[in-house]
Amino acid sequence: MELKLEQQDLFQALEALDNDAYDELDFGLIKMDRKGHILAYNKWEAQLAANNQEAVIGKNFFTQIAPCTNNFMVSEKYGLFQGQLDETMDYVFTYRIKPTPVRLRLLAHESSNNQYLAVQLKS
Amino acid sequence: MNDNKHSEYSELLDFINQCPVGLVKSNKAGDIELLNAFGSQILFPLSIYSSCDLSNIKTILNYFDAQLVKQIDSFEPSFGPICEEHRFELRPSDSASLQFYSISINKISESVFQYVLKDITAIVRKEQELQELIEASAMQAGKLEMSVGLLHDVGNAVTSFGTEVAKLKNSLEWRELADLDKLLNLFSSHESGLDQSMGPGKGKAVQKYMHALKNSLAKKNSLLQEGANKLYENTSHIQDVLNIQRHYVKDKVKNKRELISLFSVVEDAIAIQAGVILKRNIELIKDFSPKLPRIEGDHTRLIQVVINILKNSAEAFDSISHQDQRYIKITLRALEQEGLLLLQVSDNAVGFDPEKATELFEKGQTSKQTGTGFGLYNCKQIIDSHHGEISISSEGIDKGATLRIKLPYK
Image 1 (tube, helix red, strand yellow):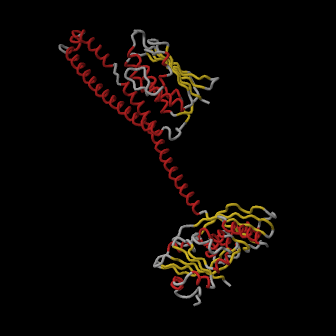
Image 2 (cartoon, each protein chain N blue to C red; image 1 turned 120 degrees about the vertical axis):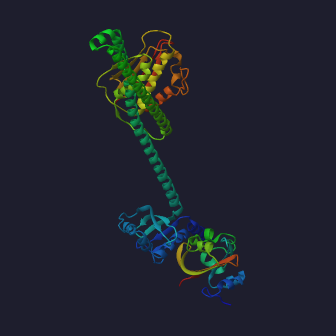
Image 3 (cartoon, chains in turn red, yellow; image 1 turned 30 degrees about the vertical axis):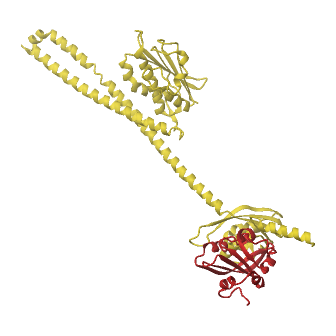
């Protein structure tokens, strides 16, 4: 099964997959708990950000790994959502301090303690 | 690049990326070449609200502060700081509160510009809270100043009212009643002569009429005196209440100072205390130099001092044993070389133990049997606040006392 960043029901699809499956995705994926602690960090994201996949587990994504997302446009939306969060937006990451345009999809649902951030490079 | 170098390079990049301020490198045109994580955290929302992408920092800044971009473009030196901690703000939505940012811009070379961005929202909020506190306390101070002004003005008005009441009270000692008595005695001893010239029985009738007249006048006088005494007591009471309030605010605001005449201060105080002095059959000797310079001070509070001193002097006669003519001598003159006015009040009353002279200015100290010991203490506070000196001396019990106040007039 090949998942796309824009597809419907991405949250439910990701909930059904394991870490190995996340590494097969052709976009970046960060799986976090409700507080932003990283539960899974896929290969695609690790390569682009030049981060060690295992080293980031347990760290806070918004404050320790990607402070560029720690503002009212990204991190605060996870903190404030009600019911569910599913928002796609264009953003700029700073991979190796190079401004890098990306498309983000912010996913969370009240039924789960997991939340996801999907990242795709903008061509 | 070998592995070691690569690892160091990665570490350095990571270090810069995690730096807790936004760092941006651009060329002269403003195209962003490098941007750390905080730079993106701050700039990205700004780029959204300025409706441009995150590629040119000058385009973004132009939306928030066009003047700043002009400043960048007109910066002529080949390197150096263009601005430091320059502030600008963003309101993310109508309901959201303002976000505040600061930016410092450094020109490194003709083609390298460095921007340092900070989110200072928390700091600005603190500053605003502090500003509100300052304004609130300024308002408080304003209210206090107003009450002090009010106390001062009402105090002055009550003092001059009190002076008039005291004058009125003193003017009600009608000596004419005694003269009328003498006249009555004269008529009584010449009753037969009156009968001869005016007709039989008329001498008695005139005396009766005069007697009734005298009684009626005496009654009116006594009513007036009673009224004046009540007025005097009530005025004193109002002054006491005002004094308590004044002491309450005394240290909070600097007292209002104006140019005043110490001569009129002393005359007013004498008028108020005249009753206390006359009642004790004390001769008041005034030795005032003419044309004394004015001093800067608080008229009402200085009157309080002189009233207090005169009262002390007068009451000091209550426990004397000698029969000499009682006197209080008030001297007022300028000590020109020192630039001081001297007010000296000396008496031949009971005096005090010379060793206790300095103690008398301490709170709660008194040489009087019924004193509270606050009088001289308060006098000293008031004189101190006028940058003056106050001292008191006596050669011993029953040898009188001399009080000296020196106040600067320059």
